[in-house]
Length: 258
Image (cartoon, rainbow, N blue to C red; front, side, top):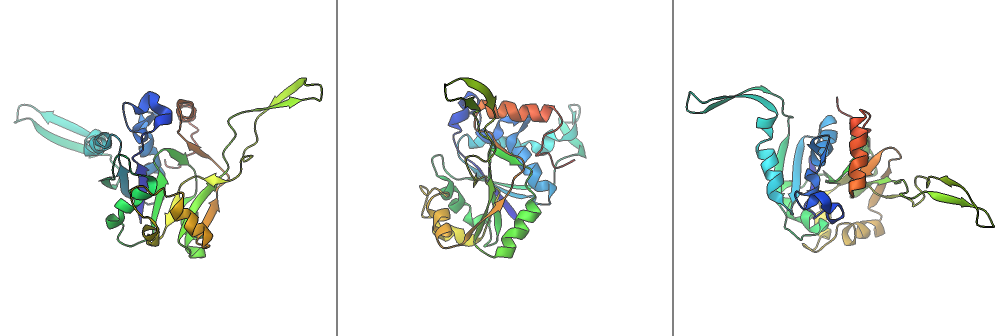
């Protein structure tokens, strides 16, 4: 089963780094967050990826063009016509298709553009800037069991701002963290889609989360797989620092691989 990753946006909310590289290439633990996402899928046996490119697409292409070399031990013999020999091959068993889906194409349009690479089969889809410890086999089983066109992973993000405890005379008596899920369930990505989704996408300007998914919702063809454990996007520098801290602590919840 193919895994489609949306990796073409500008990443304007993390412009401190995205002005130099596409958002999915911003590093956590000296590895692009795109690599972390792919490792999550690969852990469960999903190794066939289609990556939708846009902004600074060349950076992602160059990364994978050199990936095998960078992950292997290598000898350069300058005495023999600059012969290169690779030794221990450490690269993952990935097949990665990189597709230019346009600089200003919306999420739905990007999905539409990779239609020829899906082979009219069920596929997975996620965003190139979020990690989670969602159980992907259970997600897929849930999708197959209900038999509808689409499943998204529903999550309850933690609130960004704490709440004040205030008395009637306006005295602040304490602080408390905004409870997780106070803002309700939201789309956390990690979707499973049937190829019929392509027929609901008009063109490049279509936003996947609007007309296509709303249409499926109205017809009873969109289900949510509730995930109440770890999920974290990397929208801002603050998010990046939080993820980096988790990684450096050795307790990154999304690191399901060994």
